[in-house]
Amino acid sequence: MMKKLTYQIKINAPVANVFKTMLGKETYKQWTSAFDPSSDFEGIWDKGQKIYFTGVNENGEKGGMVAEIAEYIPNSYVSIRHLGILDKDQEVLSGPTVEDWAGALENYSFTEIDGQTLLKVDVDTSDEYVNYFDEAWPKALEALKEISETK
Image (cartoon, rainbow, N blue to C red):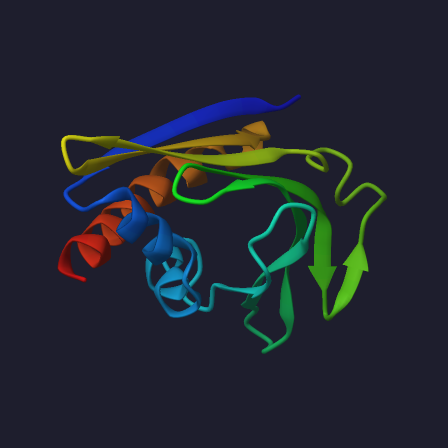
């Protein structure tokens, strides 16, 4: 059963800057290192596009998540639908390793308030990842805030 977790942060930068920083190829790696130091993505942030969220394991093998961009409204909203996992360049879209969370959503909402950005993140997850996300998401958002405010 999925749980919905919500995290938010106020960033002293315009929405367009935060949006670009969050999804930019180089800056994405910086703030998502809170989840995995090798965190990266392959693909295009555009509605209907497949995207891979990747990392490298202790054996140097690439893995990660297979997802699609369910919605993309520039400077406003991004919705990611998780489809499966990436195991050494092989997509795994069915079976016991993905059935508990395939279809889970990760939504980013950007709201401008007096020149600042309120970023809200809603994440569907299973019980086993709640503590991990409760630790990693606030760190990631603080890193995004720092990068966005200094750019």
